[in-house]
Amino acid sequence: MRTIDEILDKIKELKSIKKDSELAELLGVKQNTLSTWRIRKTIPYDVFYHFCDREGFLLNWLLTGENNRIAEKIPPYYNVSSDAEIMEINRLLAESPQDKALVLKLLKGKKDIKEALEGFDISKIKEQEG
Image (cartoon, rainbow, N blue to C red; front, side, top):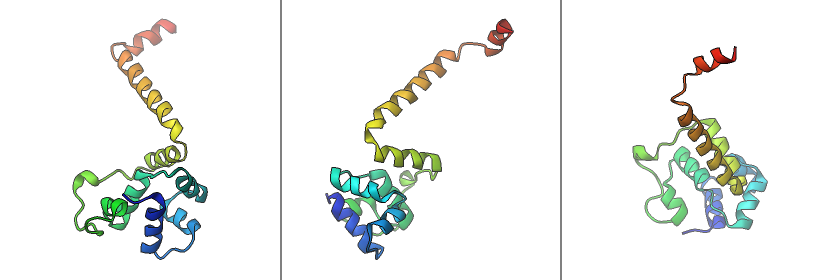
């Protein structure tokens, strides 16, 4: 497995990029996010996945240096939605990994509330209020 520094340097080499600011722009993150990754030795798999998907590289090759670097045909299970909101959530969570547990609790709580309300007829409740 490559280190975060090796991965970022490999991307710079592949794309003929010299500066971290250019690399950050390519990956769709702020430059201080790259610095944080390097300091914390964090590998943002979602960011690299989207980079590889967009550029036609194999994620496994980028992370390990093994196998063919070019994706000839990416299997369907590698397709990820290009939903901008999901990408923004991933970016924010990559910057603040401590928020992952909170987001998970919020989503589970919403699901629990939705399931609890499934048996209720909202129109009858509104009639009683009115």
